[in-house]
Amino acid sequence: MRTRTAVTLVFSLLFGTAAPADLRADESFGATQFERLRFLPNGLLFPDPSGFAATYSTAGRIDLGNEFFQDLGANGRRCVSCHLPSAGWTITPAQVQAIFERTRGGVIPDALGLGAIFRTNDGSNSPSADVSTLSARRSAYSMLLSKGLIRVGIGVPATADFELIAIDDPYGHASSAELSLFRRPLPSTNLQFLSTVMWDGRETALGTDHCNFAAEGGKCFASIHFDLATQSNDATQGHAQAPSPISDAQRQSIVAFETALATAQVWDHSARHLSAAGAKGGPAAIFGEIFYYGINDNLGDYRTGAPFSPIVFDVYDAWNRPGVDKARRSVARGEEIFNTRLITISGVAGLNFASPFNPPLPASFQGTCTTCHDSPNAGDHSIVAPLNIGLADESRRTPDMPLYTLQQKCITLADGSKVVGPACPAVSVTDPGRALISGQFADVGKFKGPILRGLAARAPYFHNGSAADLGEVIDFYNERFGAGITGRDREDLIAFLRAL
Image (cartoon, rainbow, N blue to C red; front, side, top):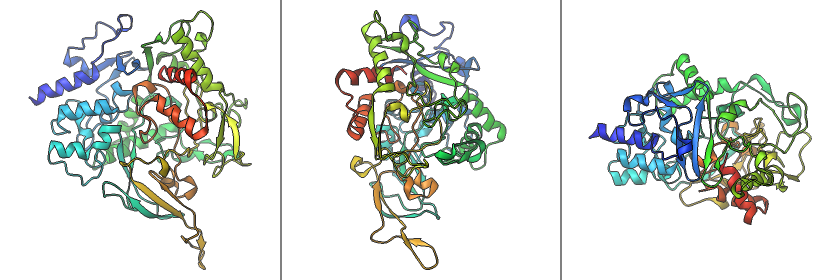
């Protein structure tokens, strides 16, 4: 019974694909042969709401024997437990729900350790949640099931220039020693474009490999390879609860596997083939993209000195011409909107205030989506630059989220130390973000911007899963920044984003 469930689960998640005839993967790959699960072929198609996504590896195939898929911890989890190839190398609520049902909430083991995502150390709403029955487990893992959120536990740093003065946690666990922060697992693919590791940058180490311009703070950082190697061990000891560090060889193997992957949408139900008629959609073209720290930075390219260009994406330029069918023209128009539509950027901590820029940027200025999403054909920020665009604000809190009130220490005592006082600034947020790493009140609510390739496969969006689909993402920017992207423009921008 358990063996049958394990096999069925793996097949339904890895091979539940009904692709258009002209997109089918190598027919010689026997998806009905369990022993062939040692590898996945490059280009194997996985369905998502708007079409199909695929992954390529520079290794020529995806090795399921890599440490990424091995049980290196103590609770059955592997990297793949939270980074599924069928979900853009993260997780989606629909797939998490399917795993829950097949494994009865992680009780029945499966061949890939997917059910091990249901562990109370960070999969449940509270580590003390009742998981004694199926019904109890369904309640305990509600944030994971509904939004694909993992609970990250981080405390207030001892040296922080603020205090946590109030907690409203619906699950009764959070404290200053460990706030409960509900976040989406970031994709473990397209890592060639990374400048920052983790939403709050906690795995981005200081070093000497690359430095920000002096006008952008001048901080220097270690290489992304170093950060990912550290992260692979921290995740194994944290999420998988390994009692001892994994070896350097294991870390390097995981990093080599991850950094070889490229994932993107290859087929759209409306626009069809995304690499047709001169377009550069799909994962294969990603390997040809150039990326380095500071490429196309707002203050000028770090290597070439070239001025910032808002034309960040050119994947679908070939479709922006007469004679191209309606669906493909829509994708191209959406790309143009993303690159060129002017919006007013104001009230953003990290840009308009509480930023490293010297001289400071204006309190309000005209920009585009690519002002922040500046990495060519990737869409993340090409330097370490966490921003607060308001996603964790109290006004956006939903009842299932904790709320934390932080107050800055603004009263200086005779010994030079600082404490809070009635007149000190205070703010309530669902997640303090970077502030719990830096210890700085100015960093409350700051997060990095993610890589945008493969978006269609991995809803919901934002660090907290607050946008159920790409339409809700655009609606957020319309509300927050008055972007005014409505009607056909909104539909075109959705068409572009889902084609990435």
